[in-house]
Image (cartoon, rainbow, N blue to C red; front, side):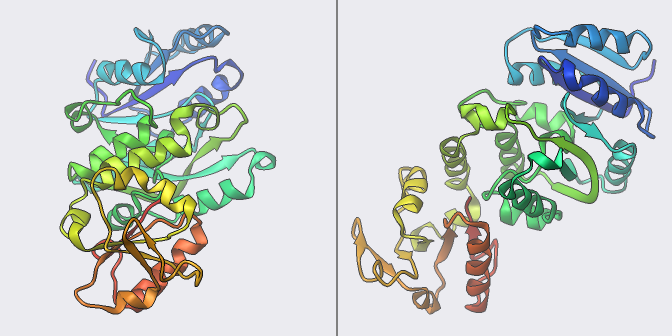
Length: 338
C-alpha cells in the first residue's frame, strides 16, 4: 500500500472510559487518507481491547505496545513507527472536529514552509472549566501567526499538544521528544523554535480538549510552575534576541515571587542593569547591587532589552502597552516571560 500523507500518533494509558469517543471522532474525519499509530502504554483497563476492536474493522490502524514506560517513550516509539511526512498528535480523551485533518493538511500544503501547525481548541466539559483555564484558552487561541508565537513563546505553551500536526523528519532530526523533569511538548516547541523552524496556528477551533481533575498537566510534577520556569530559562538564555543585548537588559518586576521565578535565568549568568517596578516602596532600593527604578527610567537611549516577568496575564498586557508607548517593540525590544 502507498504511504499515506498523514499519520496520527495516539498514545493511550488507561483511557478506556473516553477512548471510543476519541476513535469515533477520528474515523469521522472528512480527510480519510491517514494511518493511525496507537501506542498502548501498559494499560491495566480495557484500553488494549478497545484499540484492537476498532482495528479489526479499520485497516488504517496499527496497534503497538510501548516498548518503554511512560508518555515520552510511547511518543518516541510511535514517532519512529509512523511512515508519513506529517504527524498529527491526538490523545485518547480528546475529540477531533470532523474537518480537523482536512483543514490543517490543506493549510500545510498551501504553506510548505510551515513545520508545525496547531489549531484553536475548546476545553470541555464546561462545568469543570475554572476562570484561570478560560483565560488561558483565550490567550492561547488568540496567538496564531509565526510572529505572535515567536513573541509569546516564553509565556506559556502556545499549542495544545493534541492539536498539532508537524513534519516528522525535522522533529526526529532534533531528537524527538525528550525525557526529563519538564513538559515534553513545550520543550519540543522551544527546540523547534530555536532551530529556526516555522510554527503557526490556524484560527479554526478543531479540537475538543478534555479537562479533568486527574489530567497529567495537573498531577505530574513535570508540569509544575517550577518545571516551566526552569525550562523557559534554559531556552531564554540562548535566545538570540536577548543575547544580542545581554549586557544592557532589565527585568520588569522586583517583587519576591517574581525574583524567585527568574532566579533560573539569573543563575545562567544574566545580570540586569536594573529592576523595573511601580511600587514606590521598592523604587530606590537595590537587589544584589542592581537598582530598582521606575518605568520612566526606560526612556533612556540606547534602549535596554526588557524581560517582563510579571506573571498576571492582564498585567503583562498593560506593561506591554506602556513599553510600546515608550517606543519599545515586542520581540525586538522586550519579551514577556510566564
